[in-house]
Image 1 (spheres, rainbow over the protein chains, first blue to last red):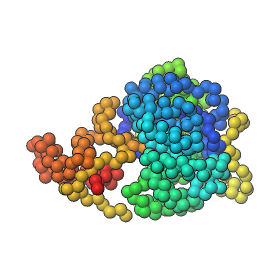
Image 2: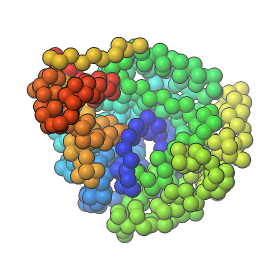
Image 3: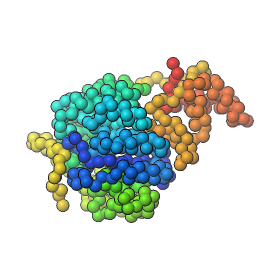
Image 4: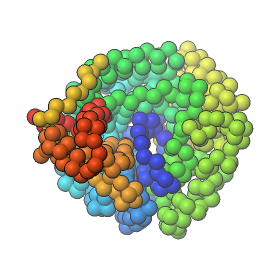
Length: 377
Length: 98
């Protein structure tokens, strides 16, 4: 989950108050840090229909969902996006569109505004055209900049989301200046989290601790300058924090993601837990999926925890970190997230940091997102 | 650092257009919704924000709220309203009318 800036100050009280609809995994971009599954292309034929999505939205709203994110892939590739946003607005959601901007036009933005879209989060790579295009895997910088201006011209609140890697980190001061000129209200410098495509490219993307400290100092300077008009989120990545992130505010706690094929997931990365079943909204009610399905019960609360989490006095604070990261790096999703310095597997994180340092000595090309990626067993 | 906001009696305020302030049945409370966030408000906070619609000065809001919370110390109510408005300004929930 890349929304490190999320500031959720309401306890869901057992309700899925935040719902993300991954309308499609198709995308015109080929970002090297894409968090979609490596086999994203296999979902193409299985996408939910407009009516399926509407039922999901209705059921989630009845269960207490208030925030809805339309995401992907690139959600604007769905021709029914306007219809879905209109329906969400009617149901009383705060509607968020999470987009690369490619696929948006002034006409479409106007249509989305007219049907009640409240906010747009635009993914952006850099203020430097070459770096931006290299990270996105396609030439898209100029188009993105133009659409960012259009979004503001139409009066949408905008979050500019920049996934931070060592390639764009040096441009942070220039990126902040650009965001201020564009008039964005929220700036999310989202340190890349290493899942899927980002994990494939980890040794080529991970910044050093020194670089991150420099970036944080630059961000703090800029915060003073834009106080009152821009909020900047910048969270030191879990690889360097020594403590795991409170991933999704706990498994099955407040957040529900629906994948393009209708699988209900506790977070967008949960499909990587391949020892679990992923029941779909095609066969089950959302209420059953949330309350009864083995998937959502699996890591909810703290009964499932092993040591050192079980007896840790911080378990209510970080919930043992991220299950997907625990599985991907230690082989068992119930282990403590290795980003935690108390984890017996923390050396795996330290090794990855060392490898990323060594990788700078060798110029190896970033792997852009593409169909047909060999998935390691 | 940014200067601390000082609320004046003749000022009036409105909800920052980035935020939506409304009643939410499922929470049995008023909420503020904004990009990627939700704030659940207690009754007092909501009662004060109801007056942040650009139509009431702080003095008028204090008058109305003091009579609503009949029996409480008027000075205390006025102080807590001003304090809450200053905190709301710091959080960018509300903006001053110009």
